[in-house]
Structure formats: C-alpha cells, structure tokens
Image (tube, rainbow, N blue to C red; front, side, top):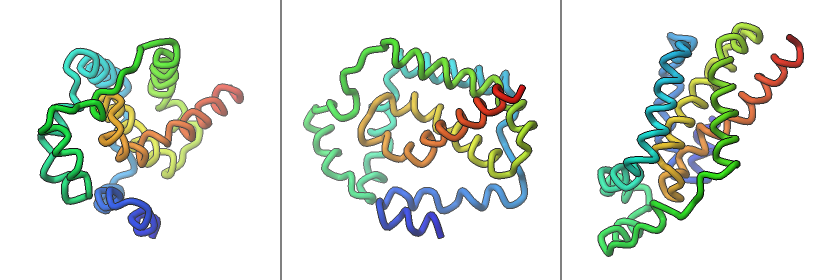
Length: 168
C-alpha cells in the first residue's frame, strides 16, 4: 500500500516493488560490520576518484527514459554534465556525514540487538544501501532522487543509535 502511494508521487517508486519480497523469508541481510565498513570506504574512495554518477547514468540512460528522465539524456549527449557532477566541496559538513555514518555502521549490531525489532533490521538494510548509493550518485540531482527511499532512513537509524548510547 505504501509503495502504491509512493508511485502516485513519483514514478521512480516502481523500483521499490520487489523489495518487500526480499524480507518475507529473512529478517536482515546486512550484519557483518567489517564488511560494511570496507564497502563504505571502497564506495567513498571510488566516488572521489572515479565519479561513478556519469558512468551509471550513461549505462542506464535508456532505462531511465522510461521513468521520464529522457530530457537529461539529450543534455548528456550535448555534453552538459552539470546535473550529474555539481560543484561541491568536501568540507566539514561532508566529513560530519561520514563520521555519523561510520558511528551508525560500527554500532549497528549493538543497536539492533538492543532494540530487537524486525522493523529496525529492515530500515537498517535500506539505510546501508542508501549510504553506499549516496557515494555512487555523488551529488547528482537526477540519480540521487531514488536514494530518498533509502538514505532518508539515516535520521531514524541515528535516533535509534543515540537512544542506545543514552541508555548504555
């Protein structure tokens, strides 16, 4: 029902339809912290060095046209990449986001064990996928839209983490 309502707001929500099926049989998928931290740094370094948004957009250009992003295709073909690689600095805000994400990731098993909730396991998995995709989209306005469904769980995960720290 929620995904159906999301589709009314934006057609990209269609991509979320298969996600609930993944959690019918298994409670969580992402629980090994060393693997998570390794992936975090691999994606971070790749986002800085490789600029993956351009590669991802060109690979998905025809698929994205189905969802109404066809106008951007012609911008890329014309050489305008401003919507894929906006100017941004890696200042204190960027470093704080990295620090908060690292705290959330490094404490995730303790937080999930403390709260013991299927809901928390589900949103943590979505959050972690969002963290990785945040680096892949690397500031792109177009590619970052789909991440609203995942990375926005960072507020909830951070709240659970802070609550865990307060009580322990």
